[in-house]
Image 1 (cartoon, one colour):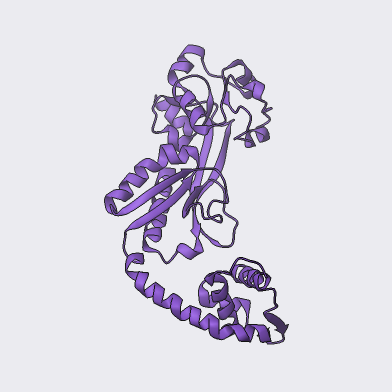
Image 2 (cartoon, one colour; image 1 turned 45 degrees about the horizontal axis):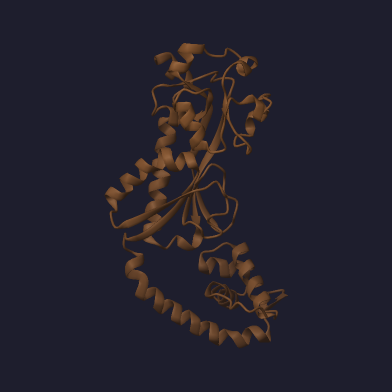
Length: 308
């Protein structure tokens, strides 16, 4: 047996499996996924150092050790339900704190206006924003809700796809007037290019036949915000979301048909938070607003360049 005491979530899954006779039944009762319940049972057995179930034709049968635990688990369930009733008033109100994680660009350029509109509707909800590209923030419970440019794969997460955002090469209008624009990929090396220093942030350009080495770049920075600031200042040519470039009239697409790729946009949160009203409010707000942001940016890149 380990020194750490198993948490209630493990005993809750244990009790549901005892009552339903299977992992799938326990998962349905709790509104969780079967793999999640299975992990809870494995973790509880490891923590207690005993086997809790044996497989039979009828499903899972509790061992003697499991049956001895049932009355105590049921007492924990009663206590948990009492705590839930006491806390339900706050849980069903639009107040408290929501911690969001997003990439640097989304967090600094896109979310502030979206979160400001949320605050106007729900002024009693405090917002914490973490700028991070780590995919495990929600599993580690470093954040409640994540805006991600890659599909979450963890079974314990609730995720909603908002759409697809396209990225392409852009430059400041002033720089194009000064230097002209490359007419093909072969000419890229003749222009100042904004890119990474030590950590490649855009690897998919390699699929287009570009050799991505640090020597290609005239401005090198591992921060997406730093790269975008250089792009807006007219330092060189760099990658930018077409939807984001619409907010900056001086940013013009360059070679839109030759250098373009897409990223999915997802909103995700841990399944244990779905009963919290403030979490649901924020989750739905982010999904709706990010979807609108993506739809507004679906104008063909060439249209913007031709309109200027």
